[in-house]
Image (cartoon, rainbow, N blue to C red):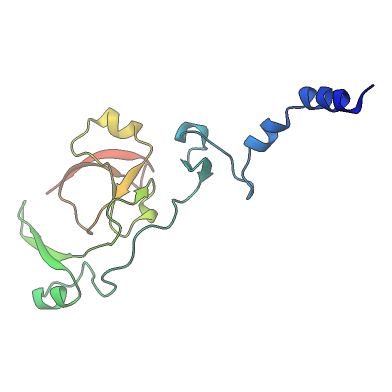
Length: 159
């Protein structure tokens, strides 16, 4: 039998292209969308990743929520934010340098991991697979936020 025909038959019997497309060079799974990945991973550039690609720069390393003095907070790169619901409380709101970076776990962000759109329904929040990191440490309003207890997005309002 002709060698070319034999090779053609062998390749048609064993779909090598499937073996190639089922994993990435580092052993991760390939994907076309988030649903192709395990629950704790998301699809980026055809590969299922546990963490998103690096994104954002630390812009105010000395800024911290606990800096209550306005001058100290501003010197560190933040600004004082206050809530007046129930009782007055203020804190230093800091820039994260990660506004708009992709996330699906709170550990992916210096601020919060929230939906891109404000005020989604509870069902829409629970269906989210990916959010974005906030550009500051405090984001008041109603958003789908990663809820650490469930590991998924929940509709949460903060004022």
